[in-house]
Image 1 (cartoon, rainbow, N blue to C red):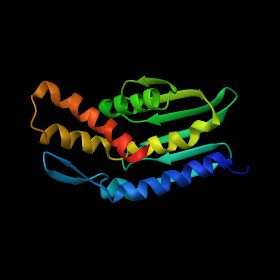
Image 2: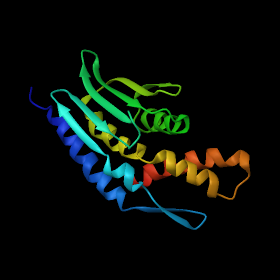
Image 3: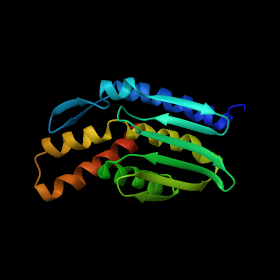
Image 4: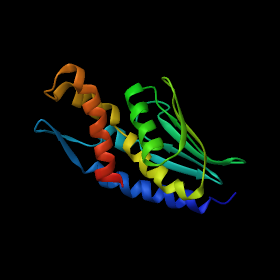
Length: 167
């Protein structure tokens, strides 16, 4: 089956974006780090078969996403066991992309029934998932704020990175 052209376009955009983000540096209280870990970046790949794309978004086993056409429209299945990452990805997908998504505890984020025009934005959003767990962890341990404020601050920083690097 021929690869769906919107999936091909989305995969190309994702590949270009992840290549750019791999060279990005960010700082937490003047401590610079790479946006992606080299190990995560080396494992990224996008594979398309017909109306289905599988995107490996990190080095952890099963850290993947599936974008596929179903009888009810397009669906995204994003798999991650990290709750903070799932919270941020859910916010990006629902608040920034206006998708209908459900966050399943310690399993991932699943979105249904979106149109073809959202495929490329979904691929772009998936570029944020790579190494987000490491960025959140680094932020949590290297930001000088009261403990009760740190987690929300770090999640909001990820949303700011989305606005700054992805949109």
